Image (tube, rainbow, N blue to C red; front, top):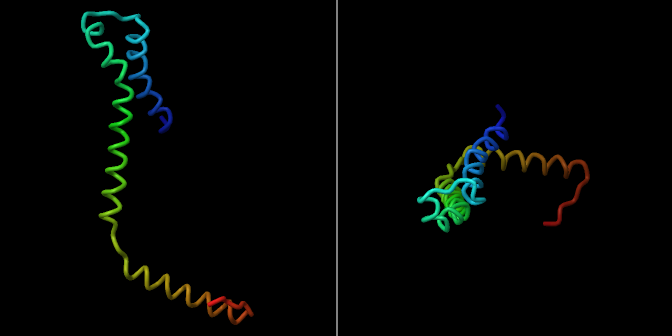
Length: 94
């Protein structure tokens, strides 16, 4: 099962009962009493997903590991490439 198929399966697990309730196919005392709440459920889930996404991005940004060895290696490669370009006649605007 691909990732897309899995997400579509989960979406259908929510969408089929939701649409059955909203379109009036399923009517019980519970669905009649909380009909407005059921209608607003996708909006609530979207807000919760947005909060979770922002929290995840912020958490991973603040806990991002610093790699000083990789930074030094990258700077050395930049200096080497710069010297190679100067040797080939390229002029930088410093």
